Length: 99
Image (tube, rainbow, N blue to C red; front, side, top):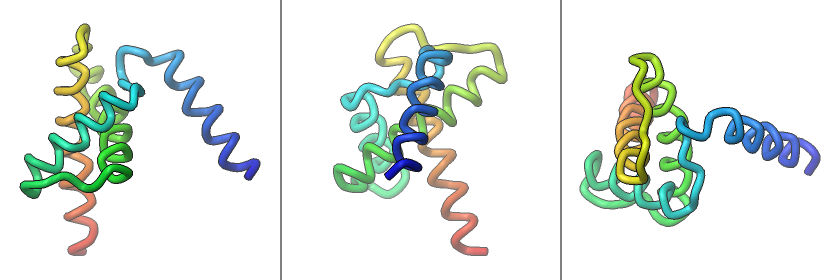
């Protein structure tokens, strides 16, 4: 239990430092995860899967966009960044599964 709490504290600290890079609202996570599922396989990944893909996609997309000096300033931009990050995440997972 302690490990999970520590991970949550680390995630919250990351959110505070990088608010523009990761959208951690449940609505943004779910929407971006669902849209990633539509783009990558034609349907969503289920509620929990969409939330996980949305969260990780937001982090990965924010990191990728920051490499180019770009940030999302509105909620549609945050969802777009998370969807792009989610697509990258799903593509990498698919490549690693095949290997």
